[in-house]
Image 1 (cartoon, rainbow, N blue to C red):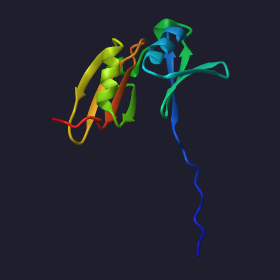
Image 2 (image 1 turned 90 degrees about the vertical axis):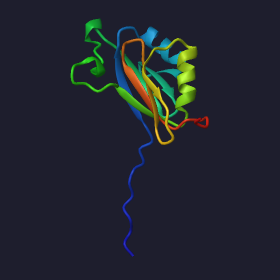
Image 3 (image 1 turned 135 degrees about the horizontal axis):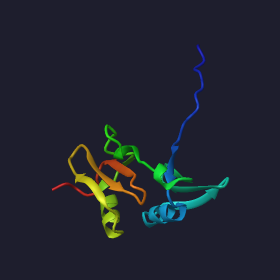
Image 4 (image 1 turned 90 degrees about the horizontal axis):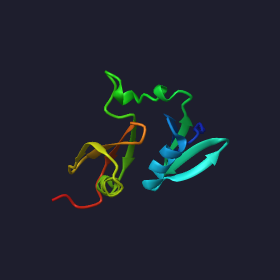
Amino acid sequence: MEEQAKIANISGSSIVLLVKDTQAASEFYKKLGFIYEEIGGHVHVSRGNITFILHPAKNKEDVRPSSSVEGGLYFDVFAYTDAVDLLVEECLANGIEIVKGPSYSEHWSEFTMKDADGYRIAFGGGVSKKLD
């Protein structure tokens, strides 16, 4: 029998967001239940399998989310969830701007929010409640 090659499992990713104010950015994400950590001199905010590394910009004008550039996508980060509706409720309860959606369907639901630096974070997947 041939031995199957072992491969490394990749369990998640960290996304670097260049921010104007690290404290303001981390407070924004903490409102959404992200856990704040300082690791190796960097600020990390994490929830589930997603981690944002909040890196301070030397020049505030350098903070330009790709979603704001002509030809860019409507989001800067996309994350999957099994409860789009619950995340929408969390955003609304915390006064977080929703810039697209929410749209709900039997097979796919999605919405996009905007963070303190203008990054558009899209969440897609299922819903926790039964659709009417």
